[in-house]
Each structure stands twice: as C-alpha cells, then as structure tokens.
Length: 278
Image (tube, rainbow, N blue to C red):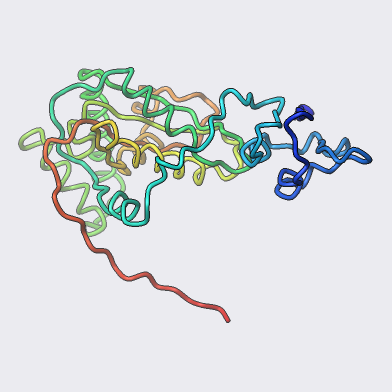
C-alpha cells in the first residue's frame, strides 16, 4: 500500500478538528493547528474519503480523492423516513421480463451506481462480468440445465425431497422450455472478487444490493439467481463459458431486465427476532 497524503488549503481551513476527530491517522499539527496525516501511519490510510466528506469548507484534498469528484450533499435530495420505507418495501424479485433488450450503456450506468457500495478495508475490488446477448444467454441456461440433470442423476442418491426444486426446474425446461434458471432475462450480471479478498462474499452481497436497489430508478428489475451461481461454481462447462478471471473464486449472479408487470402493493414480512442484551 502506497503512502497517502492530504493537502490543506489554509485559506479555507477553519481548524475545527472535524477531520481529526473522525480519522485515527490525521492529527493537528503543532504549532499552527492545521490537520496532517501522521507520518508513521500514512501507509495505513484506506482512502475512504471520510476526511474529504466531513470538511465543511472544502479545504481538504486527499492524494487518492479529487475534491472535484466529491460534490456537496444536496439537502433537497435527501429522502424522508416514509419515502425510504416505501422505497425499500417496494423492492421485488423480478422473474417475468419484457423482451426488450437492456442497452450496454444502461447496464454501465447501473454498475457505476453500485460501485459506491462499501467494502471491507475499502478494497473496492468487486468486478463485473455481463452477458446481454440472447443467444449467449440461451447457451448459459442450457449449460445450467445440464448441471441440474447431472446433480439429479449422479448426486441425489434417492434423496428426492431435497432435489425437488431441481426436478421442477428441469421438468419445466424439458416440457415447454420454461427457463427457471435465468428466467429469460435479457441480461445476467456476475459480481466476483479475487480469492484473497477480505470479506469477499460480504463485499459482493453489499455491492449487488446497491445494484439491486438502484435498478428500479432506471426502470429495471432484478432477481438473485442462486441456482445459476451454484452451477457456475460446480459445473466446469459453464465455468469455462462464463470465463471469470482465474483467481476470482468468489462470485454471485443476478438477472436484469425491464419488468413485464407492475406491482401495486407493499408486502408485509415477519416480525424481527431481537435479543436485547442488557
């Protein structure tokens, strides 16, 4: 990790100690009282940007974070409690899509939004593999069905109950080509990280959640596809077709497209189980 530095505009800095208070590696230099990175801990900086974000006068710039890329928060865009609750409760898994393709520029925009998700140690190393070609997607589904067929014939060993969902998906595919893996979606997105990533699956889950929740803003819907993800990790022909970077051993996939139907009500969920430790 390279050493990080901050630059302070002394004409703007009011020496309020906000950056010093929120960052353990920034101190107040003596005798002038302006903030600076501790020389002994410059290598420990994660480039999280907290110091830039908290400065009310825009006096501080980080060597990895340009102030010009960090606009002020607009109060008029802050959503209230009721808006936040409805937004979160409105989220639905979409399994029926319009045939309309999703343009690459739209997917690009969605991923650019998702990149603002937090990650362990601020590694920001979740990468994306995207398929939005119809013939390619059909091949991915067919390979996934091959994996299901193998699982049922080779691994079930009479345990029919636990493999019932696999049977249903495969029967629907064999009888009327119904796709219960990728749901005939016009795109599938696979988020992945290198094997040595700290908190790899947590990073992927949070980043995909950002993508998932941002999709409706662009008129899109998503569904997390666990069976497809299992197939990627267990079926070599599919793994070769997906062609993730060789060292990316952690991954998860979501399908993406324009919802065919519109949901009109919020759905209730189970009450949370909370154990207060007093």
